[in-house]
Amino acid sequence: MAEDDPRRGSARPSPDSPSGGGSGAETGYAVIGTLISGMAVWGGVGWLLDQWLDTRVFFPVGIILGMAVAIYLVVARFGGLPSPSGAPHSTSQGGRRSRPGTQKGQR
Image 1 (tube, rainbow, N blue to C red):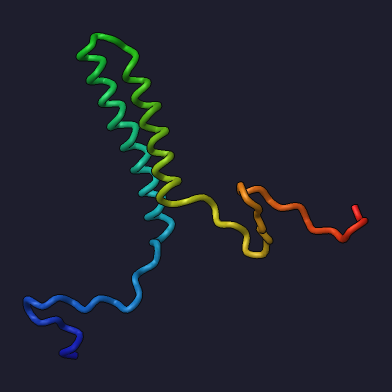
Image 2: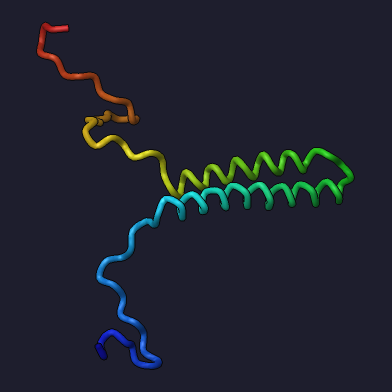
């Protein structure tokens, strides 16, 4: 019982294994937040440039650029879809799938 309560001023012991990637809802909120933030920040920069230069082109360009950067960040952080567990995936140089090996004389 006394081991469960850390003493005042001392740090809690860290768990032996770090927690997983989080639930699906947490990941979904992180993705949506990244997409909205990208559009808001870069759209805001575009709006400020439009106000400063008295134009109307930078706001939509900023929103599109913000969405593109946000999509890149989501893919870089969370990755793509996991590959199926039973599918063989032998690749050759350049990432192309190699042709199946055949015996000499067979096509």
